[in-house]
Image (cartoon, rainbow, N blue to C red):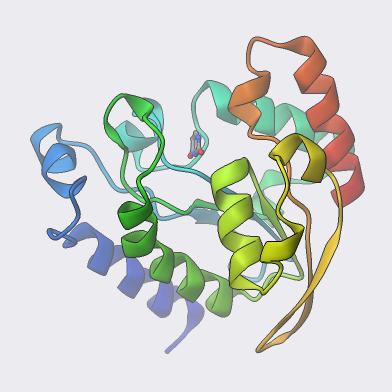
Length: 194
Ligand code: URA
């Protein structure tokens, strides 16, 4: 199957994921799961936490206020958003944007694992503590997990079944929405990706 077909298969499976505790709410709200978007051959993959209200309404990752911060950082460092792939660990919106539960991460993470294997990014940048912890653990680096403020912008090296990759955890852009100091810190982290 082509990358496009493999990614479409993920979309169809998430659409039908009625064993998810978040499925019922999605259907009741007429909302969408957010699978991810961008270049299927992207060298950089950004992994957020979970869709917010805007994202669930439109089925697109980072298209609300946190997305504006992400777009600003990308523009400042000269990375085209379209050349990257942007997704989340959790594909459906948790009510009131609460933190994801461990069983939700367990349920949705296999879809993310498949996306990584399809896209084969050279750099994975988890945004925020949940995706950073998940990705570092997945690649055997759990001993390196620290508070996200201490891992932010650091480069970790890992091996995948398709080759060596770099992992660059960053602060979650939502943390910088109303905080110019955090926005500047976030931008510094993007410079280490560049
Ligand atoms: N926050 C996230 O973690 N992901 C999104 O897609 C939007 C906001």
